[in-house]
Amino acid sequence: MAEGTAARYLIGKSAGRSGLISALIATHVATVSGLWFAGARLPKFDFNTLNGYLYLGFTRSPEVTFVVGGVIHYMNGILWGLIFALVIHPTMGKWVKALAPLTPINNYLKGLLWGWALWIISSAIWMPLVIASIGIPVGPFLTSFGTVGVQAVFTNLLWHTIYGLHLGLFFNPTIAGPLGAKAMPTPAAASATVALGGR
Amino acid sequence: MVRKITLASAGLVLLGIIVTAAGAVIEPTANLRDAGQSLIALGLTFLLVGLGLFLSSTPEAA
Image 1: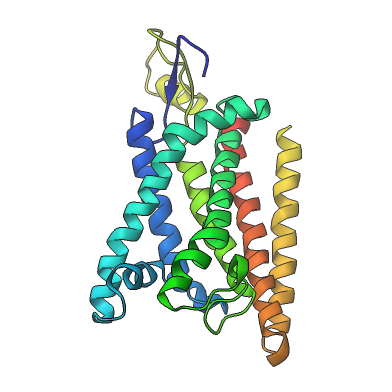
Image 2: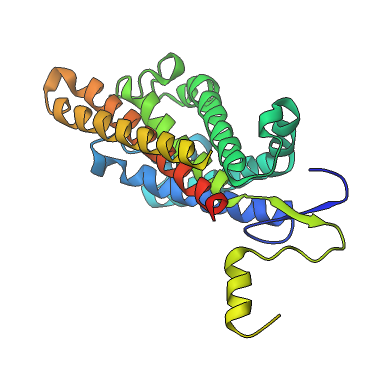
């Protein structure tokens, strides 16, 4: 963002608050979608239970494992979203000049790229190194998962696309105008002002 | 620019529908189950990316 200009957010008034709420929305939509995947003939992606197994082992009831793992999973999703909003999003604009302008399309593309980066981290590092260590067989780059074959890596891609898509659509900073100046009204807001007899 | 993005998003959605449908057709076959499910996941990914691109381009068109 150019110096002396203010950013306007779709949610909240700061990058931190906007990133936090956007990350919560993205994590929840992706998590719930993962639980619904079986309805689309895909392997069910239950990251809550998986995280529960990781921290509690296989000793607790399914309900306790789901809830405790869910808290950890949501914390992870929110923190990855905050890292995106506060660190990765501004940095991407410096690395790739085409992504520098704060437009809704650029914000969306940045969110998608972050989701796909997390997909690579999840499939290449987290699943093979961490999940395999608790006894759940995972092939290289998630080419198998328990009884599920190569479709696991593509289903993981779908899950992380849902996460990145929502993060990019909801964490949407745009240029509001110079600092201290009154923000330009949107066409819809201007029409509403005229319709109400305002100036 | 807006027209190009709209066309790109329509293309991605169409590709997503075709790939998802192909996956749904071959998925019930026992020895093609993995490939069918992979195509469904990939197709839904294309579809969502296209839909998201369309939604993100809409405010700029206003």
